[in-house]
Image 1 (cartoon, helix red, strand yellow):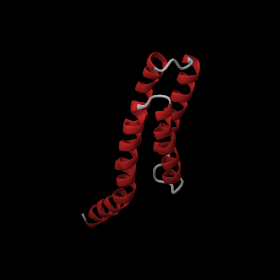
Image 2 (cartoon, one colour):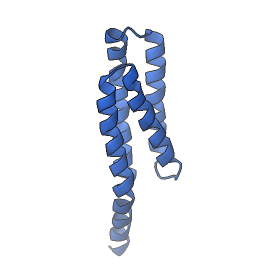
Image 3 (cartoon, rainbow, N blue to C red):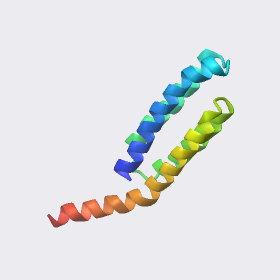
Image 4 (tube, rainbow, N blue to C red):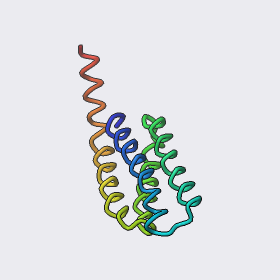
Length: 110
């Protein structure tokens, strides 16, 4: 979960930041509002990376996925991109813990 979850959230935060100018230019959203909300979502994603080993990271990550998909109401492309990242988050949560356990067992055996 450490590597997969962190990777998904880091890439997603970058995509959210890149969606800010699109929201401002194409969707005629208030620039201050778009910048503030987009930057806050990206910051929460980066902060969640710091919590990735804690149990609270998974529900926070799911909440961020819902927010990202919901941003599709402002930037319609985010429905698709947010959906893709939600799928990636699902696989990171499902398989990441198993991979971390296997890696920890491999390191302790060496």
